[in-house]
Image 1 (cartoon, rainbow over the protein chains, first blue to last red):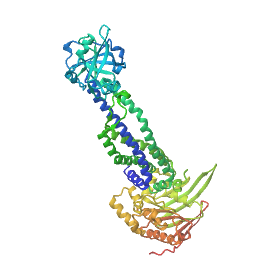
Image 2: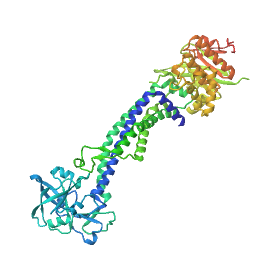
Image 3: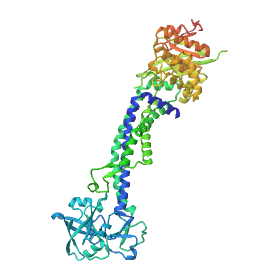
Image 4: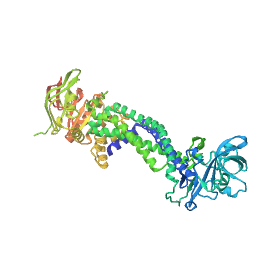
Length: 385
Length: 236
């Protein structure tokens, strides 16, 4: 095999431009595959960190009747958790509301949160510092869609525990910037004590956010969803995007591999005399098959070298400075930063390299198999059609 | 007693042509001694190249036997055939068949790489072979930069570098002018004398024939005449 690679190297170097054209096409696929997967991995990691920091904490303890994906469960999905079981938990109480920014009517969720909490990055300390009657925090998406800014007052209408409508002005005391749309779009965060007062549902919570010290033991009428469980859906969605995006690189790989396949098929026919000469000089047919297969594999090695030369600086730049995305997460519906930082791990690079090398070897072996059936006399005459 | 290096007995080679068969060799009974400088001559289609291909284990007979260097060609596996060619037989072709992407040095070195010789030994033997053919100054040239005569000299060096017992040369001078043809054949004759290597030619070139010590005439796949002659060779 050493001889095959040595000779294959000489043959490819001797073939000049043809070699570098094939390697160039394949190297492009290589860079795109690494880039795309790195981008998805970066997105996944960023989304997981943001998800944990802004929404999931170390897990959610949810009222049995509350389902985060079912807005109809908000009305009944709450309860009181005994004080002694609230250690290392931050309560969140959710109520449906309507707001009237600049005379428009919009649905919203009023979310009461313990303003002293530190488990989530929502800047709830601003609620503590404010002297407003009902201080409120909103995210930048909410601020943009309602045209509200810090210091603005907006009328909010809600229903109390008896189903009676009530309304009051809330004061925007902070606008936070997050990549997590589910804590931003259509959400108004106020101190939980205020919401208890407004609804008459003192000490009620829809869910609790656990910190890292929390350890769950079974509690009647409450269920615990761990951080991993909560992140599972997010990871699934991102991986789904990875799969759908793989079509692009499958196409690119196919183009690169087709170029190699085409070259190898042509080689087997055009280099018949050369094949005959190899056999006459004492190579076995399987050695010649190995030589041609090694030539194909070597395209992928050359492609990797080329990809490294021009791809490494580009990918390093993107990993360091990120890529700006014009569409924000609220339009995509999942956690997505305005600037994403791809992650190019060693596993990704080696995995892609192996994929490219193995694929190139297979597409080179297929036409090379014909050599095993060649009659060396006919090959020497160049008469095989 | 001289050593028989090639023995053919009742050798027959037939090729399928359409629905019938073409008999390229018909009942060939020949033997060649070690160190012979012999040629198989005859018109096109007389079976010269077929005979050389069988002797070189590139092809196998339809009937009969061909014993080359003690091995029955019909009974050799692909691997054994390759080993026989690699270690014991050198080929020289009409169109040289040099590997175009390799330099002169690398073309000559090729057979030694297949024999897994060390780099030091390869270098020594390649330079020695290039000296035999007078091309030691062209080691780094590509075949495309060589004249026809130089190309064929490289082919001789490539065939001789592994010091084979037998060299099969198929129309080696067909593409050369008279001057080069004489020089090439002279080179081979010198090597034959110096190294006692057996040379077997297929040719219909009068210039080559004049150097041969033995000429086997083939006609329609049969041996028409087998003559021992006194060549015009003069040792240089």
